[in-house]
Length: 82
Image 1 (cartoon, rainbow, N blue to C red):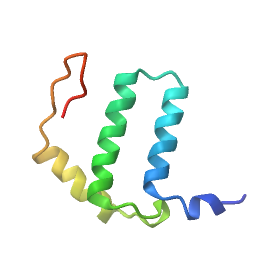
Image 2: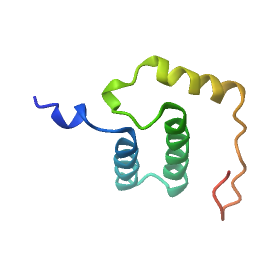
Image 3: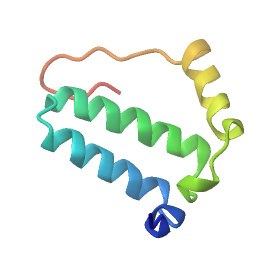
Image 4: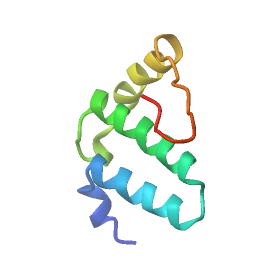
């Protein structure tokens, strides 16, 4: 099995691929937008490095933030929450 493309896949491209896949699967726009917003926020914490290089040390700080400091926005049906 050839894993070549995964070795050099950067996080921003992985997020785009995931969002496109979920859209193609028929997930609601609101859900897809929420996934994209959360993943892009995490990318801000972790950096846009190669996916294969991520470890739990790259993920855990963001999980702690989400559990302790994150305040979800309200969705009014017209705009994306902040």
